[in-house]
Structures are given as C-alpha cells and as structure tokens.
Length: 361
Ligand SMILES: Nc1ncnc2c1ncn2[C@@H]1O[C@H](COP(=O)(O)OP(=O)(O)OP(=O)(O)O)[C@@H](O)[C@H]1O
Image (tube, rainbow, N blue to C red; front, side, top):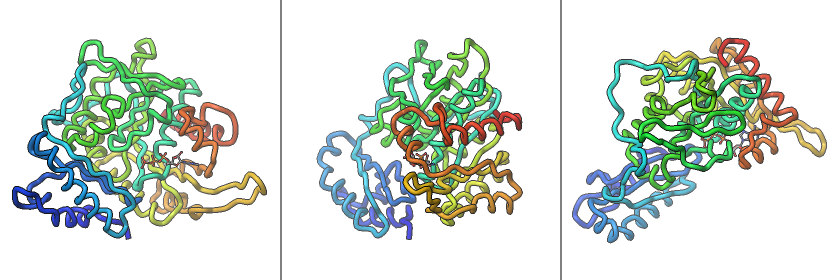
C-alpha cells in the first residue's frame, strides 16, 4: 500500500515540540511531499534561526518517525527558519501568485503543450526533453519549460546548469541547448531553497516563468511555434496554476502500461477535463524491452494498456516507446537521444511529426 499524506501527518502529529503542542498543531510543517515511490520530504519551519539550531533532535525524531511508517522508502527532513528564506539577489523569484483575469497567452509563444503523468517516474521528463529536441530537429522553434518544481530534471537531461541572466531584474533570459530554448525553475534556485519555499511562492515563480521569460531570445525575436511544459507528476497546484494562468493548447499524458500507472493517468485526464484543457493524446512509455543479447521481447510493465485506454476514452494514442538503456543514459548525460540516430530517435521524430501534421507542433 502506498503511504498517504494523512499517514505522514499523523506520525508528525505525535512529535511534541518543547514549547507545547506538536509539529502539526503548531503548523511547523512546510512543503510536505509524498511520492508514489515512497519518497517523503518535508520542511520543519522554526520560528527563528536560533530556535532552529536547538531543534536538530526534533528533526531527527520526526525523520525517524516517518521512516518507520510502512511504505516509506526514504525521508528528507529539513530544518529551516524564516530568516533563512532569502530570494536570490539579482531577480526576485517567487512571491504569492498575482491575481489575473482568466488565462493569458504566454508572450512570444504560439502553442503551449503540457506533458503530464498521473504517476511519477513514468518518463514524463524524458518525453518532454526528447519531444522538444525532435520538434526542433524538424525545423520548429521550440521552448521547454521545466515546471516540475519539486524535482526538476530538465537541466540534467538537457545538460544545462548555469543560472539564467536577468539584466533588468525583470525579464529572464532563457538558456539554449540542442536547438531548444530552455528554462527551469530549478535553475533559478538551489535545490535546498526550493524545498523550503512554500507552495504559493512556487506558484508565483511558475507564473513568473510564464510571463517574464523572453522566449524569443534565441530565435532572433521570432515567436516560438510551441512551448513544451514538463509538469510534475499528479494533479496538484502546478497543473492548476498552469491551466488557469496560461492558455494551454493541449496536454499529452504519459503512462506506463502498468495498471497502477493507468489508474493515476485517468486521474490526470479527469483533472484536464475539469480544467477544460484539451488532451492531445496518450503516450505509452516503457512499453516493451528488446533484449540486445537474444532479441527477446519482454513486456516488463505489461503491454498495450495505454492504447486500450485511449480507445476506451476516445482519445488519440500517440505512440509507444520501448524501454531503452541508451535513452536513460543519454537523459542522465544531458544529450537527449532524439538528437542522435537510431530507433528511439526515429520514434521521437515520428511523434514530433505527428504533432506538426496535426497543427500542434
Ligand atoms: N523509455 C525509457 N527507457 C529507459 N529509461 C527510461 C525511459 N523513459 C524514462 N526512462 C528513465 O526513467 C527515469 C524516470 O524518467 P523521467 O525522469 O523521465 O520520469 P518522470 O515521469 O519525469 O519522473 P518524475 O516523477 O521524477 O518527474 C529516468 O532515469 C529516465 O532516464
């Protein structure tokens, strides 16, 4: 059984704080994240830096209490105090989201395509990076926005690590790699700080990425044909912020053929239906494994489930991608496989072509 937020909160409510009450009743827990793979992270916010220094035993006790829960694979518990939460100097990123009347068009961008998944680790970021590279390879002007603020992976996948510049302290100049204009919230903050940010600040940061990044910076002022947005897994605040603050052309939902992943993919589809965001189609990732030694095909996560689901829901099935070692190595190494040659590059190329032909790329 997967661990739930409520179970983690119940465990934290049993940790008493010296001044009376407990971690939950004193509202000291921030950024509680519970992933399907059992990874739990949270921040304990002390009233001041001085008190925070005395709270290490409490942090260790909270971490141990959550580690003992069944279904928990790892726990990251971080101690912080409000005075430590300084925004990076050059550009103020974050802050509460600003009110706005309805969704706005992202400046400098013709289409916004969100890549979503119900479950974590199914290959959403891999698809986003490779699709962006494949579309750029076919001559399109493409941007990639990593909105997976709790676990940004696009800097690693695209091989970028420098902090984007903001000469006027307002406009953010994106980076470029593999022919794609790229921006990641992860590049604006160091990872430890991202964890201590409260939800609304992160949503404010996302709103800034949508409104303040000069997406035409690397195209000589030309508008981008499409901005691919790599969402976090699930159906949370980021999805809601994106679809309510920006005009999203459509979403692509990635799933493995596994029943559990499909179950979560359905939740993502329901969310897009509620938000009235069109779903462009479903992609099955890690569909089959071709053994390089003997040529045998193994259906490690099952087979065909996503295509069947798409048919049932009357949605386009955009394609199936096999489990492929080179894809993982290339992703980890910062050179997406779609930029090279071979069967996987062809598969991403075909997916990109399909989107272009459908007027979506
Ligand atoms: N088709 C594939 N073949 C082999 N490895 C893959 C494939 N797709 C993804 N991977 C690997 O699986 C891991 C998870 O993929 P990825 O980060 O794209 O998933 P995600 O859904 O974005 O995860 P997260 O929930 O962390 O955002 C990565 O190491 C990636 O390289």
